[in-house]
Image (cartoon, rainbow, N blue to C red):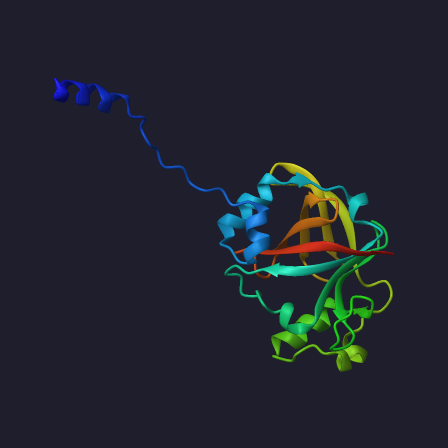
Length: 198
């Protein structure tokens, strides 16, 4: 009697199936490190962002550490973030002017010179401002592109074969991925947060 009841009960036990955890942006923002696959999962789940939502603001950035060879390079070299005055003009590489690291005291670095110095192992500090400050007119522009099946905003460097494409986390935060011809894979991921209106 007991064995027959147990047999019937066993058949009523629901089958447990394994389900792979999908990484969210909140996971990345908390740890600030992830695999490339986890970054793509979080990126693809976000809404697109419009160019107009980026324009008119200075943005403070931080890196998401993956296995990209440039991870840590910007953090170690006084990178602050980016700013966009219009869809045609912006500064893609804002650098702290002093070691105090105030977002109100930054200057636009010329990308070619900045990356050339860091490639040589030179740390970018405020006293190098005269060597790397970007002249007026050298910067970036914003466009809407089709990326991974979605139309969203992307920033194109004037000097380099690099564009940064963004997805919207909320009204004050975007998640970016760099598409670089020199280092096409793995991609480089970062976050931008609104710092001030310009």
